[in-house]
Image 1 (spheres, rainbow, N blue to C red):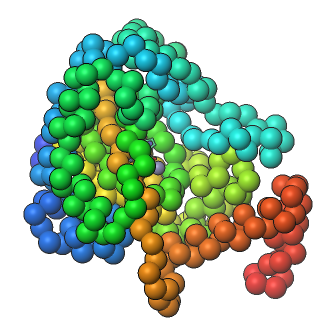
Image 2: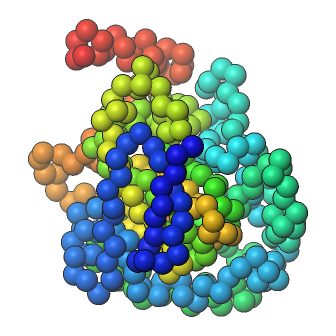
Length: 330
Ligand SMILES: O=C(O)C(=O)[C@H]1CC[C@@H](C(=O)O)C1
Ligand SMILES: [Zn+2]
């Protein structure tokens, strides 16, 4: 697998996987730069520095979390590969012979930390992905309250976003990968320990990324295997052109809603800890034409949902969709 050398601001170089598509850099700007507001208003990704958003958590490591996360049970995914492809198990019955690509385990943080420390190369990869809630220990609550809520709440108000819906704590090891998908929420992704690489595609490249059907457990995920793309089945993927961002401790990536992202824990950067800040999108006051790509994706999803409901049988959807477009709009 080809890799290339990279670095952030001249700091210690590390290696990134190479793919078939080009990668341009996401802008990296201080939160004091007015360009940050412009990019967020335009729903363009940007790496924002100096926010102090999670400065109160930069001392988090396996030992500290093990001592302070409390004795609650936390969500940990286990995968035979280093990929953690999200699936909605409520949609599992819609697809014949669907095989869950990773196992959902529940364990205490202490158990998770022990498995990470004793992990042998042949063992399954592990990824803790736990919504921060009141089950954590007191010191974690203090660190959480110490996040720069003034700054992020100011962003929420300025850009007229909806409510904060979740803070997901992510604890993984280098080379863990979350394959390419899009979400329907605004996201400030805060890096606490280790480095993460984001491969981003704008919503306008929906046609290059071939998401699964909406009834599929992998709804919102790309069908394309970036490590071995099937250009026969997914010819438009040849036209995909990515933006790339590598974030380190203290960096915050603004990840706009409907933007495709693959997330990789960077090799050689050790234990990886992040926290997401997901917000509901704001209301669309006035429809303006031409419609934005993300509005068209939302429209496509609503139409797919309507067709699925009306047909009431996932097996009928492919033929219905093909009858609608093949030879008519192709
Ligand atoms: O923040 C998001 O939108 C995500 O997809 C998260 C789910 C797994 C996380 C990761 O860092 O691998 C990223
Ligand atoms: Zn995501």
